[in-house]
Amino acid sequence: MESVVIVPTYNEKDNIATVINKLTALNLDLHILVIDDNSPDGTGDIVKNLQKKNEHIFMIERSGKLGLGTAYVRGFHWALERDYKYILEMDADLSHNPNDVPRLIKACKKGADLTIGSRYSEGVNVVNWPIKRLLLSYGANKYTRIVTRMPVKDTTAGFKCFHRDVLEAIDLSKVKSSGYSFQIEMNFRAWKKGFKITEVPIIFIERSEGHSKMSKSIVYEAVFMVWKLKLLSMLGRLN
Image (tube, rainbow, N blue to C red; front, side):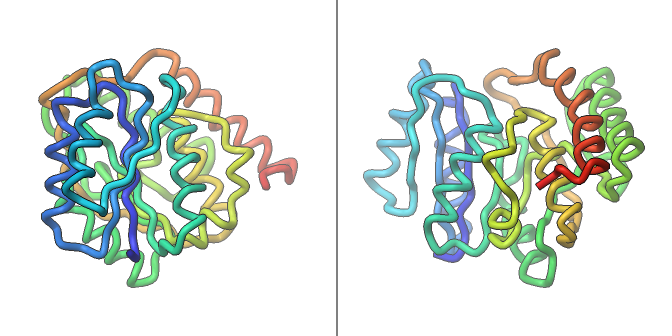
């Protein structure tokens, strides 16, 4: 397979089967890797049942809730050990439309090294968010652009496609952040290494099932991460 989409999960029993079935229905040259953090709601069992019928589904089971960033890094290592050329990130809550996956891959095939499914590249394309959450997200992205000077409008987006060259060039052992800050850090490291980043506009729809994983600690981590990245870059220590 040419591409793999990595889907981290924690208590996503209401959504995971739909996500996987929609990805499978795309009929792409695509594998699906679920990384489940020992979801107590039985998400992992649902994935195992789907695996019995579909050899394109893989799963890594972890011991507990270890964070989004470490889940993706584990998935990146897994993907790089194989021959995937395009490695995607995607949420399990259906806020990211599986039908947009081909568009992200296509943008990479046309020359981008990292493609971001962007909520803010053409105005604001977010559905069903309360105004407070929208202002927080939009403000965080503007704040990140001002501090880092990174030319990306949706720096915190979690719907992305990496060419494997990007992940091979980044020292993943030094990526320690999670949540919003993980997405910012990966974008910043790719940008500083000179890779081409392209934003593809998407419509982001807030989850209808399950509960958001957003927390104050995730927001605070992102606030300080941008300054840490800028300082490391200025000191020449961003490897």
